[in-house]
Length: 153
Image (cartoon, rainbow, N blue to C red; front, side, top):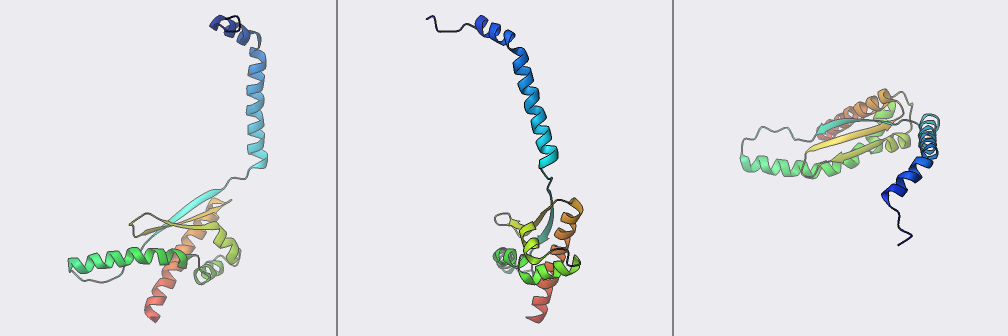
């Protein structure tokens, strides 16, 4: 029973070593601030959304349901198409060749919600304006390539 500490003993220990506790806390805080300020680069993320749908004026409910199902299946194909060289080369050209296809592919992530016709094109970059520009250019290049494939097909 002699090895058990009482609350009074714990407060006595804390009272004796409060200076050490405070100095370690301040030292840790200063270290975290210095590492964050000097060694970590901020990364910004911007998104564009694209809705996948076909342009038809059919009023039949069965037909509309089939179109929605077809659109949901197209979303997975379009996710791959957005990061294809066809779309990325258009983005590269619109960005005045500031980035290579590989760099653009690494910056872009395409996600969808389950059973959703909306695709999120997310771009990460050190500059928030560049991230937004790449996201918007990618959405526009995809839209352009998608309409061209329907016109030529």
